[in-house]
Amino acid sequence: MRVPFVDLKAQYASIQTEIDSAISEVIAETAFIGGRRIDAFEAVFAEAIGAEHCIGVGNGTDAIYIVLKMLGLGPGDEVITVANSWISTSETITQTGARPVFVDIDPHYNIDVSQIEAKITKKTKAIVPVHLYGQPADMGPLMAIAEKYGLLVVEDCAQAHLASYDGKNVGTIGNAGTFSFYPGKNLGAYGDAGGIVTSDAALAEKCKRFARHGALKKHEHTVEGINSRLDGIQAAILHAKLPHLHEWTEQRQQRARRYTDLLSGVSGVTTPDLASNRSHVFHLYVIRCDRRDELREYLSQHGVSTGIHYPTPLPLLPAYDYLGHSESDFPRASEWRSKILSLPMYPELADQNIEYVVGHIEQFLSS
Ligand SMILES: *Cc1c(COP(=O)(O)O)cnc(C)c1O
Image (tube, rainbow, N blue to C red; front, side, top):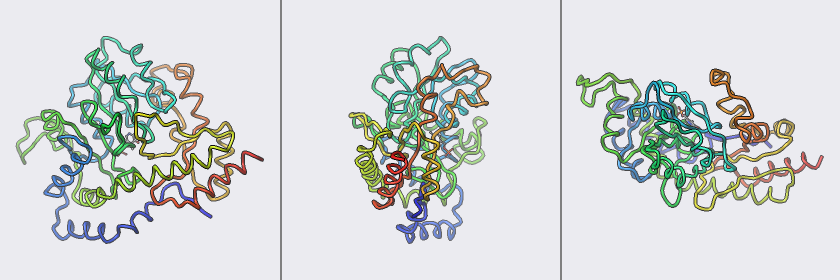
């Protein structure tokens, strides 16, 4: 048996007619850039998340950069973020001219909120929490700190479409939320795409203008901006997929429960710890195992693809050598980097696949 890490073909097969007709309509109308499909998707996505505004942009990385820049971050500022994420989270802070300040992870793989205050200086302007793997960061105490120190909060929701904290969808808790619609994300386009959500009308307008060369109307460039657009084909695909997202999310959650049930009897594996006031949308199902590398190799030999998210904590990447950090600055992220393993996870993952994966984990650990 082969168990892929994600299976985008299975999802396409299940909605092929809807996708194909969405794409051919855009081509027939040659509505490649701009137009009603962009507005329509922005409106339904904002509604799905529970935000007033959504601005479609070129990708999830631009989404973070645009919001940070439009919130006024720049040289001399510091932005607090988390040690374990995809590099978009921190490289966009640097792109504005600000400096990333990293905080270790908590037992849910998110920013350890209890360590934020110690990192705040006179230069600190914002916090960028990441809802990693699909489980929200601890936003209650995080927002209390932000309020106390007057800090902006931008939520990186790239892995957490429809995840919620105390009943509020992620992306609606801070000043703005940023989403990626990269093909493998929980809501994925057929190419690059991203979105910004906010209920701050002035911020929404600024982001929209900046992403479109500084012009809300053609040729009326009130400022300089960048070119970061959600294109017509991607908007049509995302619009066709959005009505399925609730069901896909439930399927991910059901698959995750199945993994956890089956793995609960296996010693040597730690399954994801779910916080009670949050919903986890399982973009990734991540376990920890002391013999991770050997286990990964064993699974690969038996046709099971896995991933590591991420092999190196951000502050320990060569890109951040200039910050002069060592593993002891981020003890949990440093210890867990060699233990985390992402198992196959997607809505169409069959029960027999899950049993096969867990069966081989068990076999390996008892050898
Ligand atoms: C995928 C991802 C991004 C970036 O999204 P792109 O659309 O690939 O630019 C940002 N942050 C996190 C945590 C991600 O997983």
